[in-house]
Image (cartoon, rainbow, N blue to C red):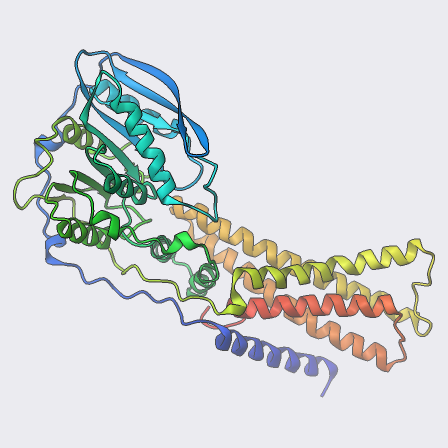
Length: 498
């Protein structure tokens, strides 16, 4: 058998071993079941014309920036108030995830103020809130401080001062409403009434389905999610919703790819029923996305009108007519929200970070060691067969660059998925191409590992005597690449399905 044939066989065997290692080490596959739609959701009554009738929104308003002290910091808020005399209903906007600022609600807050609602938008806290640690109770305290600031105003009806929350903010507003009756009502926009982990997993699966992504992409991303150990991902909002006694308006978009809206509606109604709260109104808006807009552009037809008519009509609008608590366009949710299988201990974020750090140290240590040896004037050429070292060194460098390229490609691919999750039109060819690049780089790294090991073995057989730094370089790069291959095997880069 020729040397090339032996290398091909060795590569094939190692590929099979890595595929099997990935299969054995991996947690159960993430495979959410189909959701069986209830008859009540399939046959919703239409919204009445009165709910989205035109609302005059041309009144003059005043705009005032204020500072509101909260726990551990001070937040800046903007209050927009109509100049018309008397007391008005009031609304505090509570942000979704991320470091939101009050400017993202300017359009809605201004529109509602011109329609007769005092609005308050505020910058989200950065003290005590970050990517890893999120205390929804702390955020609820902030919202209550904003409610208190509005209730003290002479132009606000304290009995009609409420909270508007979107996405992550709908985990915050029920806490605030359960804690204090100062919250006169709650508006929940795109409320995922499931744990954050289930919501993200559902959104990921839904968006990958729409992108026609290969099964392997879903398994890669869900395995990565399963290794994340952030406590807030397990938060359950149902216990707080069971304590909400105030009127609730929940708005969902039928084109929202981010939340399981049918399942969330079912959990929301069950929780409010358990609280003996019949003052809730749930509306599905056709064509609306997660932010109540159409394809990220203008607000969906009837959104602002439905919101304004409900708030301005309180308390009369708190309880809709019998049989019309849930109405609007027909929602379609294909899959249930399911938990991502928890990663085993060896695939947790800390272990993965440690493995990648060792790989990086191996790749960096090799050229640094060579540079130090040269600067000290040591002999960098082995005493026997020095002609063999340059070829080996070139192989090691190519392998290190391929490993770095694979890591960069994976990060770029995940970023691509996130970006195309927002605007999915025409995205699937780019997703398939990106996945192909990742898989090809993984296979190329495997081939380079096999051929480099063979080259080192051949050089040793031909009399090459490596120095200590050369031995360290070979071990560092080959060992680092080996760790990277095992990591890639766990995430399915050598396995099937595609």
